[in-house]
Image 1 (tube, rainbow, N blue to C red):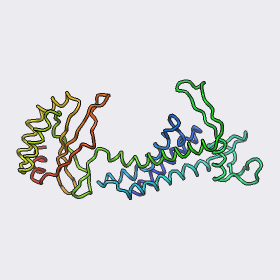
Image 2: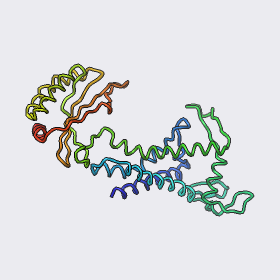
Image 3: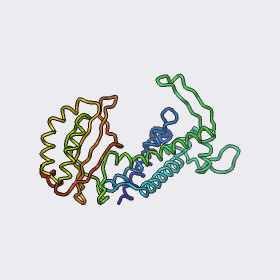
Image 4: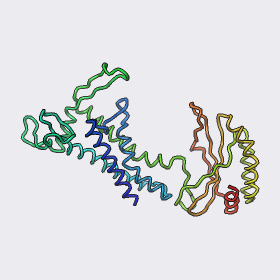
Length: 298
């Protein structure tokens, strides 16, 4: 089923690219920010693999190397769709202008000057690489455009950057979809259902951890639940007025029922928001008795 979802979103990415090309005459795949950031490629690549990774995560699975390798196939299919689709949509109007609205005759019915060969997919793109020019605009100053004369190597370099963007977007979709989620290390078949317990500041973290570990070692789920309830009101206010805070969550695997205590570290960014530091996350397995007590209390 995940293959079907992958094919569907790959087709959607091709439709988005060709629809923009047809209606606006703009090659969205070639859209770059600051000349080197392939925004169009990244966006279309993410669309292409979204369905495949979405279905994997929905099944509770963690994308592995094989999944990322297969996602490259969807990226290549979308790329081929962009290239072939553009060529099939290229028509020459009565005024000898190329358009992508199916107005006039298809470009394959024409030849390049000095040649008897019809315009094929390959020589169409070879012509574009050799003859496409670029314009760079200063932000807010369209009149100050810098025109770059047609140069094959500049165009090929830009094209390769777009392809890298497509790859980054496609692979990044899987990473983004699992970002911040904790996978069950017991059965490896599901992502944990997480429930917030409490937040503490850096001054209170050591005694709180010591107490929690003691309850876990004694397999005292009822005592742990009562301790967290008592500390929550006191700790939450102190944790909200600091640059670094630690959060405790209860994680429960819906597949094997294994429970986990998750400790996360958050730091305040320049916008005043707390951002989780993934490298400082700690996940501790807890017993079934503690799992039952926490679920009952929650």
